[in-house]
Image (cartoon, rainbow, N blue to C red; front, side, top):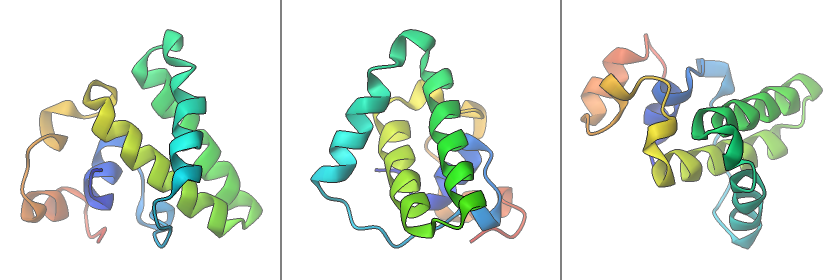
Length: 106
């Protein structure tokens, strides 16, 4: 699984969208599989679906669901790095490089 900061760069998330705290369990694997069923749309399209769901949960104040969705996004981007919005900067960088590329997101 990729780090939250790497996920933020890869999916163009902002600080307020980095809701962490979910612990990986079977539920996340099942959620991931439901998104993978949509790979015919392209990995980038699936990434956009997950990000849209994440933002929807945040808009509703459902932070637990948002944390689960962020974890699924991290799993998805690890499994499908080609879905990264900014592949030039998100794969293989050090934590320091991620932090500096996030404009203060930690």
